[in-house]
Amino acid sequence: MESTKYSVVTKNLGKVYKNLLKDDTVALTDINLEIENGEFVSIIGPSGCGKSTLLKIIGGLEKPTSGEIIYSDPENKLGFVFQDSVLLPWKNVRENAEFPLVIQKKRSPENEKRLDELLELAGLTEFSTALPRELSGGMKQRVSIVRALSYDAPLLLMDEPFGALDALTRDHLNLQLLKIWSKTGKTILFVTHSIEEATFLSDRVLVMATRPGRIREIVTIDLPRPRNEDTRNNPRFAELNKYLRELIG
Ligand SMILES: Nc1ncnc2c1ncn2[C@@H]1O[C@H](COP(=O)(O)OP(=O)(O)OP(=O)(O)O)[C@@H](O)[C@H]1O
Ligand SMILES: [Mg+2]
Image (cartoon, rainbow, N blue to C red; front, side, top):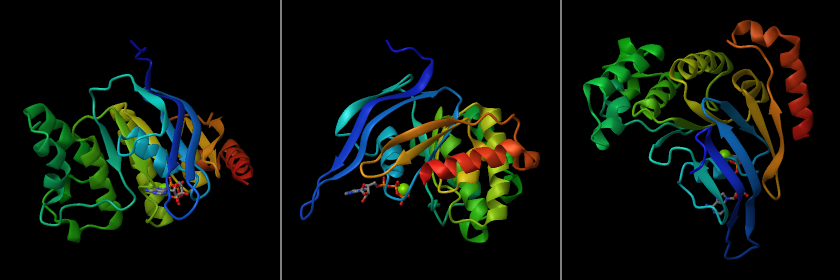
């Protein structure tokens, strides 16, 4: 048996997309990663370097063409939050957040209670009965985060969840996400285009390079927690951002 110390380990993971009319695309090569339980890890890198592909493979939505992934708890499902969350327009906030529980037939008093706690943490309690069309973009993203956490998945995969939002909303949601993360003890793998966002949120930042998609460096973010508005004024915050920006080039 693998040790349960890590939530996810990837070994020499690779992905090649076959193309009919042009050369194959080597989307990922030699991805070796160890993501510890409860860690917040962000992935940054140029467009097309394989960030979404890596997330999809870890999430089981794509198959790798080489290498393997070892989950410490393979029975447990994971949650996915995409850039444009799709909510069911005819269901209200609570019903949308509850949807995975309904589908998986996991509605129970405990799960319903946890759902209500998550809605509260995400500041959505008073909008429980609102329909998606009545929500702002940031609120919709919060619903999709609660939905992804509703069935107590130990691992949350987030692909640019706040990419479409304005900077202020994004900063606010970052704080809220950290609050949910620290209260629930989830492991989070978070793709972003924003270096500052990655630095602010993460324990480690995975910097990827392109052609072929690969890991350039994994940078430890040694900023104190809990993170808050003061974090952005910490000289170390600027230093880390500068370092990451130079790495991406
Ligand atoms: N289904 C697919 N079929 C063929 N090629 C694909 C497919 N999905 C992704 N690719 C290719 O794999 C490479 C990596 O794509 P991926 O979407 O993982 O990049 P990304 O880092 O998420 O980029 P972005 O920052 O723009 O979202 C790209 O060259 C892309 O064209
Ligand atoms: Mg992508």
